[in-house]
Amino acid sequence: MIRIGQTDIGKKKIVNEFIKSNEQINKIYCFYFKKFPIKFNTKIDIEYIEYSETEMYRTFYPLLERIDQNTLLIFNECMRTQNRSELKYNCMHHYVNQCGYKIVFEYFPIIDNKEDFMILLDLIDKQKYKGKSFQYSFLKDEDIIMKPRKVKLITDIFHTSYGQKEKYESEKEKLFKNLGMKNPDTVPRNLQILAGNFKLAKIDNEHMYIARNKRFNKENVTTYDNIENRKDYIIIDFHYRRIDFNDFVRRTGIEKVNYISTDLSIDEVLIKEFIQWNARLEAIYGQANLC
Image 1 (cartoon, rainbow, N blue to C red):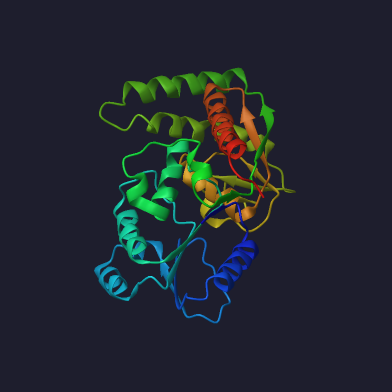
Image 2: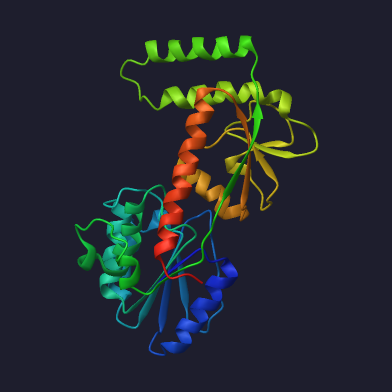
């Protein structure tokens, strides 16, 4: 089964009910990503394996010897890259081929686009979906239930000065001129940092903010790597990796994203990308079985 959007409490309830319905299960392996550890309370022995460990020889071969048709595999937030052929995924497929039961938990059904969902389907039946592209009909072909995790974007527009606009355009021209063989993604990343610097005037001492780095040297401005489980953050910089932004939403459970936006082109692009990502989520939720 695949369950989307569950909290840890919900996941534990689902696992306990699944075990009660499948009395043959005598061993459980839980694969999890380090940012999202979880502990299940069952009478059956559970071994926890961190995502990065799945491809290690010391783990791979012993697991192949121990996993059988009475084994339950739990995958907890293990969709970490959009590369469907990732070695860690391939190792997991070997484990799945030998087990009798599997449960896949993810907070979001995708990282960035609908093809990402095939990664989750591969964890259910790699041979069935091998080489296939995503189809909405697949959402009905398996035991898949989703709890929609919708994120509303609220923007607070900061109007830059003439001098700031000039500095931005000058920096943009300089970045493109010196791009050469560099990754073109460095241009919007650097422009976002500059635009973020202009937002300093909007930072007060009463709220908590998130930036991509610690350049503001303020106690109430943290980074994506140091967030706490609170829902009142105001975002200065979007993370340039979608998976890291998703992790921020996943960890905080935030439903409204408050973003300080400038009137510069980089923020127009970032807001558009967020809206498009949200629309792709909505399209999947609209075709799925919901709870």
